[in-house]
Each structure stands twice: as C-alpha cells, then as structure tokens.
Image (cartoon, rainbow, N blue to C red; front, side):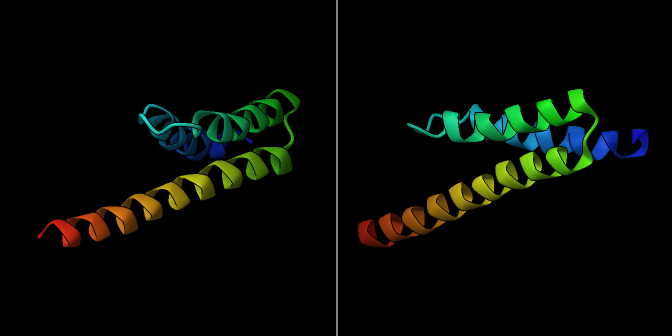
Length: 79
C-alpha cells in the first residue's frame, strides 16, 4: 500500500548504497534483492516486496559484519 512506500524506498536506498561499495562479487547478490523488490512493486504483491527487501538487507548486514570482523582482525594484527 502507499503508506509503506517510504519504508520500501529506504530499504532500496540502503541496498543501493551497498551496491556502490567496491566489493568484488557482491553486486549480483544485492541486485537480486532489488530485482525481486521491483517485481513485487510492479505486481503490487507485498510478500514479494518483503522477500526482496529481507534478502537485500540480510546481505547488507552480512557484508557489514564481514567488513567489521576482518577490519578489526587486520587492525589488531598491524598494531
């Protein structure tokens, strides 16, 4: 419905910001979430929209955790 459009837009903005990061092999995985969300928006199917957003945001959280874990490990090794 129209009242959830700002939340969907925010989710797509977050996913798109992660797509811009220069990490090899991640654009396809995040792009799948954007694709599924877009198809859900065209079909006006909330379950598909939610599935695409959950997929994309979970991948974003996973990427952020990996960067944090490897970043702190490398930082501790260098100091």
